[in-house]
Length: 448
Image 1 (cartoon, rainbow, N blue to C red):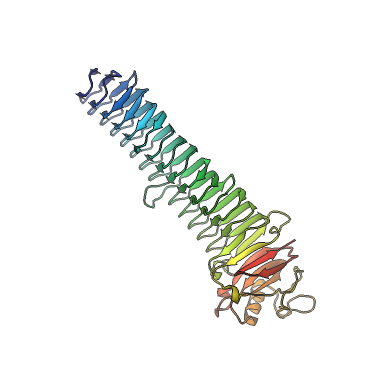
Image 2: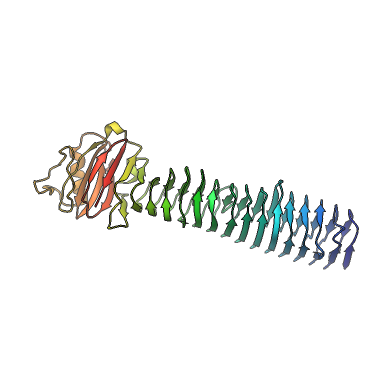
């Protein structure tokens, strides 16, 4: 049945069949349209001018809702159950709600400016496709719901916005500018779903949180203060293609065997954390900042002239779960990378260097353990045997040496009384030609 709505403030109720609602652009203020069951078409062909307190509920089945121009304010549009097609071409979307409902919906909101009051778009359950472009304003929330959803969101001069992927393997792409962005790959709680999150903008005072699942996160850059890019549980792949600048920003993999790649510079007081698992961390240019591998046998590759490789505990890199730290320029860590060990006080750290065929560094404080004049171990040949020999000869926790085995150099810091099980051992790679220095609860390694 066909319905023509040409007066404001009316309630128009359709049938349980496939109805057509045609609404005059001047007749929408306070108007209610109830589609009931059936594949309904609700069209505002002339736009809505400025629609206040408009309520549209298409209810069940595959409905089509079209608005061609205007401003929606304090308005609710409900697609209901079924695979709906909702297309809103607007100049404003303020204090309003759009709810796709259950079903595989396709929803487009184009060109809308956001007002000062919050607006919400709920895609509902199903494999939904949402495309939205918003200009100015703030407080937009897009919630995908369950299902493998696709969200493409442009936010120009928009702040304090939130995107929830919900359950399922979602694909979320956000562009534009503005601070205070929050992207949760799942819901407000931890959940699953191997999400793909792409942010083609520099994050400022924003958070990307993939939650559970094997997620892929790609962010153009990080600036300002306090932004976070977090993979959480799962073997995540995190790529920051631009610079990480500003301060107090965090790139974190969480639990799982994560791959974290910073393709540009990390500068300022910023942090990269691998978390639990055997993580692979690559930083192309370190100026400053800290890199924590965390628990597990991590592989850390850095280049540049500064930065810190940090350990919260000596147990984060042992003979059984050993980190490998290397550089990309001539196989060397650039000019004095500092290893910080927060579990060891400055007063406890002492220095030394133990020789071997692949080591030509300076011996500090005359510290040579069972080595002959040529710098070779006399009683132990392999890595495990040499580490045990060193552990047996050191008497104080925090005593620090560099030694060689099979032409690979290792940083060694003595732990407690559990043999080598509580000693820090880090693989530094080959071609050690420099020395170590200790200060401020840290060890600085200089290599050629």
